[in-house]
Length: 628
Image (cartoon, rainbow, N blue to C red; front, side, top):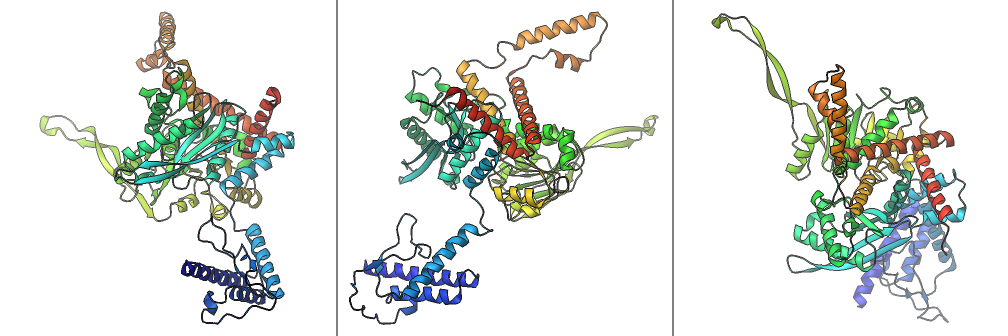
């Protein structure tokens, strides 16, 4: 036990020396102060400090008790675990000058940590700063603003699972419910080793403001399980998912009227199906039990169009912002209004990134010039750009790596054929050939793709990829936040203060608007589950009959329509068409409200979206009152 304690103190002494030397080299303290700190450490631990390992301990001063104890300064100590406190050690006669020097170092390092311009805010700190800036644009009372800002409920728990090898493993999980101003709360479930308390609180807050921005009647929530899902087989993942669901049930934190999870990073339809089945086993008498989660498979009560909803919402949002002449003029958008013909870089080809890229290319006629994934990024040199479908297929075949990607193109080539031997003339025919498009793979850091010159940059992976460190090198004209929080407060501040509007400041379309497609269609799924009826089932056939009657009238009056036009005109709206129509209307309305607020308040779209959501939530509290 004594040996272990001695080694621990030796490590602390070495850390003290290194940090004191670093502080002196950086100019935060004087060299004499650093020397005093080293002296303090040596005299505090005369036997065990590395600098005095061979020295004999000096006897204690007269009148000083050997049991007198003082703590090692907390800034300079390095305990082996964050949940363990620094060990108290016997402190003999420490000179007062050394004590003052130690205090000087402690305060200098604390000040450096708080004031250093290199320190990037955490995700939660960024969200809170955006909220604070937007709150200044409202007339909501400070007390109510504080209530809206704070996370209402945070659950943190652990549970054991039995691995396939017979070992028991302890799993940590979280669920944050940010706001109960409307119920149920709504938010995804992440499976990732980076899941933390701060992350789920930040994401839950974003979900609250996002729902308010697009007028979806939910409070915000978010959850996560701290695992690397690639290290578990399917049986183990099912066990984790079902046990996680049971833990939520035990805490009354899941249910159609309480809290409705959905897929997020590392989860999908399969996990939502497991969660639904587990919930139903405990709530067989609840007739609305199928609405306990959204993002389910179609056959288990899911909704058509949910998988592509977030990506389609990204396209609708970008299209609507760039269709406005005043937006294009204010930010001097390159290549003018609209999406067509613009060069697009996509960072992250997961569900959101893939569908956003596909819709930008297929519906918007944009050119995807680069796609980034974990092992690097692809750059296209062709006029057509990259095909997201082919890239996605390659990723599925290689386990998520872009290396080795080759893009094939089908091209029609005219060929002259001679029929002289048959006594005929020369004719032209068309054949289809397979060609290889010029694509370059750049290995290494995929974040470098964010700095490529492009018209539209779509960060579609995780938060914080555009930060104060790389913001000066971002050259995109438009940053479309398809992910949650991809631009930190530090980066946003750089764009607002160091870039000139109308010259080189990018238009940032905020996540509160652009990432809301998923929760919008989840809302449609929840409503469908509560109604126990597929959208379009009661109306599709009558719509077709009505339009067929219109066509008959037109034909009797001599109007002839092409066969394709007849099919389009007579088709009734099915569930997919209705979902996309509802999503398009939601996104168009949100863009209109956000840009109108931005013009009225003289702010950027992000602060406009935040301030709009704050006003709506405050209005809910104002009309419903505060209980009791």
